[in-house]
Length: 273
Image (cartoon, rainbow, N blue to C red; front, side):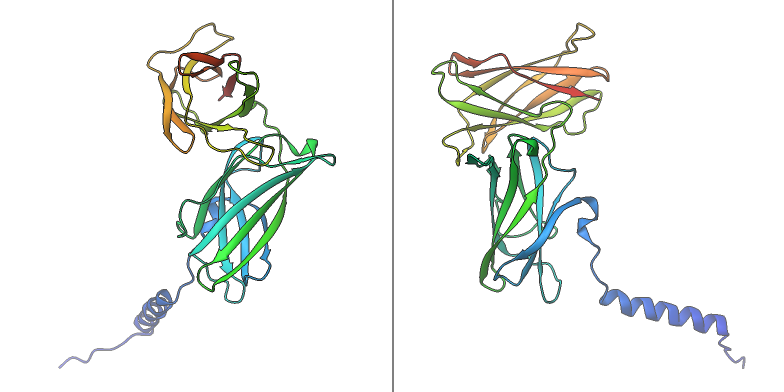
């Protein structure tokens, strides 16, 4: 009878498999924050919670998609159950004002992140932006707030504008570009967000307007076919389609109406790619 001889190479391979198999059961989760840029981090006082704020780019005037990551301050493990409330504020020395915002819609994190947004309406050159984030940690029952200073830059082309309604010359609206954030040649998803200024501290989402969008290439003197005007879907978001037939400088001319009354037709959003 032949004896089975275990070579040193076989033993090393066996131990390696055993080692990695056992480690995989206790492996640390991949860092979900690696796809994002960290804008700020700190502890929410009294919550035993570390708060990290992420985005896909540095903060700019316009609609900013933000992601809040919470971690237990003792263990470093993600906190996936919490109520997260945003409070953006700009101090202009002689006055202060807030900005349109969207708090996370769920108390359960998505891949450890709480998605939210702030539409910064002016750059930090005009004053000091702070973003207060109130945390109600549902895993330990503690609540508290952390305040971050946010540096908001002005992009090369405006991604948000405001206007006073032509119907009353009093009501102020803010219109921001959400998509396309990475435009391509062809049909792109178009998404705008519209807020109404109720006071210096309140900017509720508005669903009352209709939007007519006309894209053009000013330097080439042509537009494009097969566009779909954005219509309201939910929470002030208006979705449609825009067709870019070539790369370059495009202008999205916007006409906004309240019923049959035109409330603004002088503003546009420029996109270059």
